[in-house]
Length: 195
Figure 1: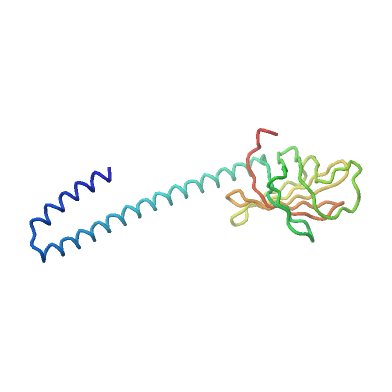
Figure 2 (figure 1 turned 90 degrees about the horizontal axis):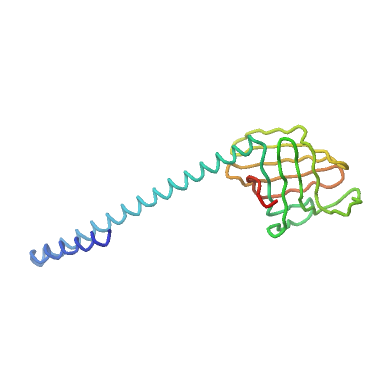
């Protein structure tokens, strides 16, 4: 459509230029070029506003989705990085992990890197536990939700602190009686169907 308009405009310009004398031709050409630059700038500006509106709409939809997940207390956290106390961070993008939150049960299958104060007889080195959440608190602070949950498993008790920004990116720390505190960075989302 724009191409057809440009061709029609080009034909119009050619007819007008042929009717003018030489000194007026240059003025006319310069004026028309400036007009074309103005029209092109206006189109780019309109497209930029459209992109900004779409981006803002997506941001609002994501904020609403995160708000619904937090209020329902039914979501899962998946980490892409672990930050053990006193050690270098560890990339977890190829390491399956999750903490599933529901009002009645917290299930954790997170890797653990750090110091253990007592050995586990099960041979499991990760933070794998499940239990009923105690003291499940959610507080909205600034641009994030702050969540604290205490969970008791058969052989340990855990405190989970989760900070969730409105776009879903999250930081979580898990502390227990038998291990050093470890932090994770990742995202929350609705449960994945595969597990």
